[in-house]
Picture 1: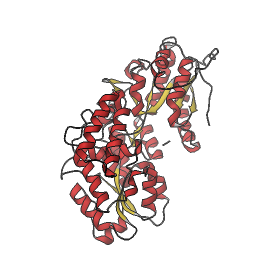
Picture 2 (picture 1 turned 60 degrees about the vertical axis):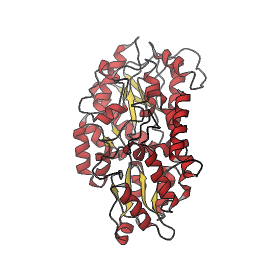
Picture 3 (picture 1 turned 120 degrees about the horizontal axis):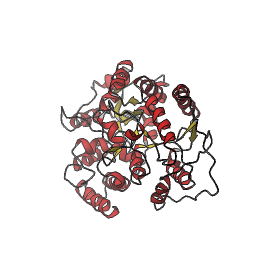
Picture 4 (picture 1 turned 90 degrees about the vertical axis):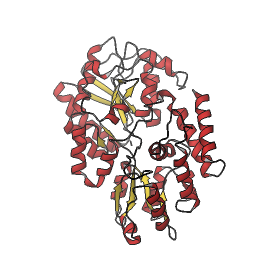
Amino acid sequence: MPSTAGRIRARRGRVPALAAALAGAIVAPALTGCAAQPDPGTVTVLNSATDTAEHTANQRFFDRCGRPLGLKVEQISVPADQIASKALRMASSDSLTDILELDGSELPQFAQTEGLRPLDEVGVATSGLSASAKSLGSYDGVQYGIARSVNSLALIYNTKLLKDAGVSPPTTWKELRAAANKLTTGDTYGMAFSASPNADGVYQFLPFFWSAGGDEAKIDNGRGEAALQLWKDLVTDGSASRSVVSWNQQDVNDQFIAGRAAMMVNGPWQVPVLSAQKNVDWAVASIPVPEAGEPAVPPIGGTVMAVPKNDGDPAREKNAGKVLNCLNSEKNQLQWGESVNNVPTRATAAQAYAKQNPKLAAFAELVTTARSRTAKVGTGWPVVGDALAGAFQSVLTGRTSPEQALHRAQQQASAGK
């Protein structure tokens, strides 16, 4: 989810190591010249809050936390897919911001450079965070990033269509297939999901892959094939459109809103659009699992805030830590989560969120069992993600069997390491 603001501040210390380590993976021209002298009373943040409403909402919280500390917090916002390259350019010119906010899946490549400060060293309290949230901000067992709120995936369904068909929200894969089949009529498919050959499709495949026992560190362990077969069966029997191979998550939501899908897999970032629909009654349920009573294991998503090292000015690191502590108080997490329809990462705040937002309670429950995509494979995740995308694309288009697809995916992942 996602006006550039503020001045780029000078950085010193070990951040050039960040630039050197990422230079092989991210091509970006280095800035030249001398960096401006930093203002000791300003904390700068590099984030992806380019949307005016989000940028403004962020600033309210930054001002709320900075003023009592006698600090001004300034945002430098660029599109999410440009954060890494922007950070590289700033690091190479010794001007990286005091706080770096990036997608949780990108944290390992930054932490591996030793250019980030462990949060406990700058006084950031991470006790009380959910285990999944800690995993999202960790690398090699060390907490480098903290998320104010997180998201995941759930089953969103059209309450009227299910009621008219006499169908209850499915809880198991068997029930999912039966419900999707019964709900498929006319121009309406029973089920919609994204199987695009990119991050959207992989994100939506993971709840099924992981819940079946699939392992991203050993893709061909014999467990993930069931998830591929489920997706293939849904498409083959006509319960899901063959177009899922090209739909991203927004496309899936569009199909649902248009009445061409009775159920879909999607996330809380779709809530504003769904809530604006006058003719669509919807509700949220947990992701169906292979067998009754088993926990759903979806991916956890969101951004984390980290503190780049600044050995030449440790006071700036401490100021960044103070701001992060304030942003992640129970009160601020809860208010921020409600403003962006994401779940707070502090357990007490998450419980309050579920109570105050019962329609979205399923998301709050799901993030407790959610997993980080990088927890097992770290910086190898991009290669693994590509391999999984190739696997479900080849199965859904009839090129290979689930077993062959995951065997090839493992070979691809191993070759890419």
